[in-house]
Amino acid sequence: MSGNEHFFEGAEKLLEIWFEETSDNRNDLRNIARCDWENVLSHVNCEIISFSKNDLIDAFVLSESSMFVSKRRWILKTCGTTTPLKCLSELIRLASLNGYNIITDLFYSRKNFIRPEAQVAPHKGFTEEVSYLDTLFPNGRSYCLGPGHITDEFLDADPDQTIEILMQNLDVNAMSVFNKKNTTSASEATSISGIDKILPSMHIDDFLFDPCGYSMNGINEKGEYMTIHITPENLFSYVSFETNVAMTNYRNLINQVINTFKPGKFIVTIFANKCSLAYETMKELEVEYSKESHWKRTDMQCCNFPSYNLLFAQYSYNGKNNCK
Image (cartoon, rainbow, N blue to C red; front, side):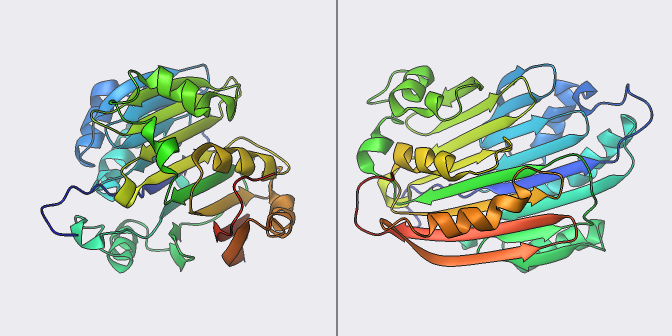
């Protein structure tokens, strides 16, 4: 691919931080003003496009993906050539002003980039990202499982789980919905694609980019979230799905997501702590899903941390049209 050809890096950088609970119930990250969030995001090189909220969570659709803010948890997911690690110092300062001085958990992860040479420091390579985080969190640990996963100390806390499904080589017809030549609005794209049926309890805030591309956030009354980001161009098509909805088995959810977007290959990661419903079912999910004859598992790794389990599995298309 020459330097003059259009390209967009769909693979996201995911940053999640939990702060230690305080005795003052007034402390809340959602008290941080929008202008302060805009300043945080200026370090990342992205902007706020849309906003939704309920009693438990604030959700921001960004020019490059999403941000979620709960009482003491902050999640930033950005694609392209954004620089999320650069906002950490400002975020920590704002958290301190709002009563949170201790970070209990910090997670940073990303899939490998198609064009890593196009990234901006400190994201030019995994080693550089680790080194940058080490300057702020010297006791962290790093792991390569396909996607990189960097962690700070693991501590038992509230039930916590995240499932990511990262898809490439998407079906051309499925991706055509997310082009303004074919679809007039984000809500139409959401409905035609079936995104609104994946987790029906979610209140959806969606955006269709010009000329193509799509982002959505969903939040429900339990404070759970769902987010999807789509780069539909055929040469580098990419879709990411993420949610922290608690389930005892994610097989049906995975099947629904895969049937919606029809990738040629995909990665599933599930990260759950000991308090989560998903903690004991991750190995069972891996065993069950590997029996699906239309998907060939090309890689699988399970890691057991002091308070979390991580499952990483990669699949490629194996000849049939649909999951059952």
